[in-house]
Image (cartoon, rainbow, N blue to C red; front, side, top):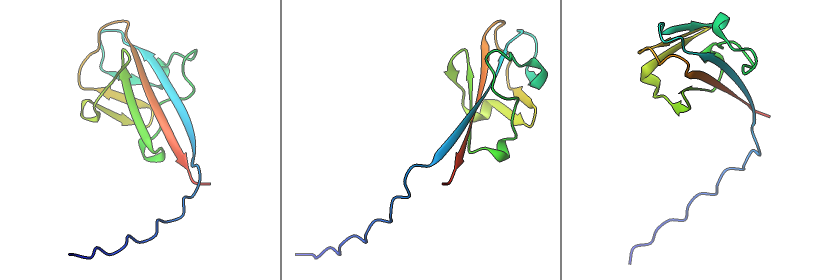
Length: 101
């Protein structure tokens, strides 16, 4: 019979981590693949296009579908898509910033 050593004790759970969420929304014009802060639909946006180096997570949804990161580039104030979305579909950039308590 082989004796298996006991697992080390688990580290203390730090509790909940606070998160802030921001959203940039634009509507595709069916022509361009680059969008800027000036294209934002302010009624649905809580921010411009944030610097991806200053947030924890960036997600892009086109017409409600989560897009893989290899299909777009986010820079401060700019979203560059690898393709041109159909006219009228929403482009939603979600930014999540995790903040240690």
